[in-house]
Length: 332
Image (cartoon, rainbow, N blue to C red; front, side, top):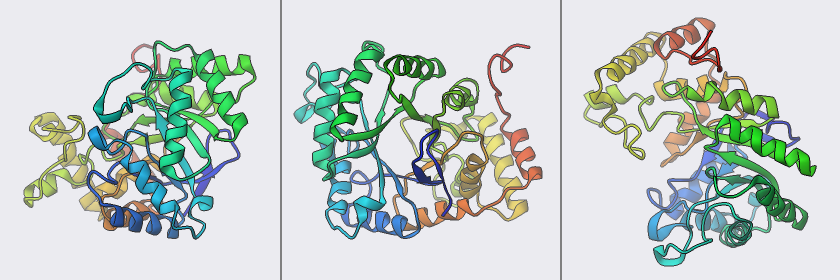
């Protein structure tokens, strides 16, 4: 396994991030534990989760599964860089009640204690803001985070699904307070969705944030969707509606067919190339992979060792054109 620093920090993390979103909803506790064991054995030390994972009436269940894995001992917690998130409503029994979501100091305090309990740990390495809170000032957010750092409950703070200007606003506010600020941004970024290159990734690089792409296969679209469809295994799986019916779009289908044909000529697997491509991108710490099975984890691990030629990278750019940074992306 290869390791890198998380943004401008001294924290060393694996270049593959184990995403746990499927633990609970699609993968039972026993199999989830087996996947985490296999990941750790392979040198993956960076695990990502969120307080809302498990979803609906089972929200929090994923953190509980990770916590029960830590409880088995064997150095599991000490070897793991643990990341979780705060923002979504965690009201009991699906109840929507004020101050049980978003990023108020009250909810951050409440949410971190609940996550620590579910995760069976006394600290979180990377505490991430799952979404932008347009109603809470950054000074209030950083005041809450500074207290948690002083208490030893969290070590670093990161963002997820933030725009480039949000990253700038957040870290300028942190700098005024003498706080460390954001050290990572978790964003939607893959071959088929490159808009993060316009402003999010340049902002992250400028402020020293590690970029952690989520949905690296774009909901399965980049994992051999056309071939699977032809073989009767279904195309891109639905992921929040993002890839649902994507292959019905003739332009998208043509792109994916060209992508798969190109990789067939090189004897490469689409899903592994999609991950390996992200590892070549400036500012990227490592993509999040969310395996439902140990076999899917094995495929992700192979991507770390895959070297893509400049010829292949150029061909991929032709199929999935780069947006480039702003303002050049849309102006001269």
